[in-house]
Image 1 (cartoon, rainbow, N blue to C red):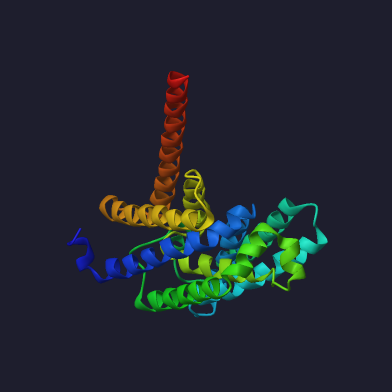
Image 2 (cartoon, rainbow, N blue to C red):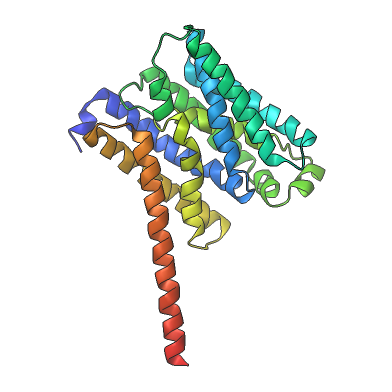
Length: 273
């Protein structure tokens, strides 16, 4: 392990990985409890358009992904008012439109860089500039959630009351945009939504209160990302895929553990009866 972190690219990757593991469940818990976890998937695909625009303009792809993804977040809010009864249709519209933009730009030859690292995640291409961008967006996300925590909780459990109270319902989309942009370098666009949703789903199996569930989600996320990063270095694969697989296996293990406890509890109650 110590040998692995002697390399500068692994140090950069580790910093980004830790920040990702903190940021994703922090916003993921609000999305999952609102049953909007697929918005993370839609906006992650929208970030591909942002990456393509940034690479075509020779700008920082992470920052361009944040800007474009934020715009698509606003578009989602607008479409929700138009298609209030067809929420799944909104995601199809966003996915189709954003992927269409990305494919058009990439296939036109305007992008000279390799986009594969953004799709699947990469530990070899994380630059110092990427680390700075991720740190900035992570700090913005942490501060936003910390300062507006009561409003976000109200928005999660009672959106109508939040609107009456003047809470900006589009706020959560900005935070999701920042989270997605932070994650694309290491996790990859195709599996960001798994890191947003699966650690939270795992933590929910423990049936704790809101804050404890958030804490456990961070613990599971940190485990998934660090183990995925370490294994990807050893095996020589993209970290995003392994992280998604580990997240799924951890969720399955916790579900089996919980089921075993329930069976044991019933046996104890039956024996006492």
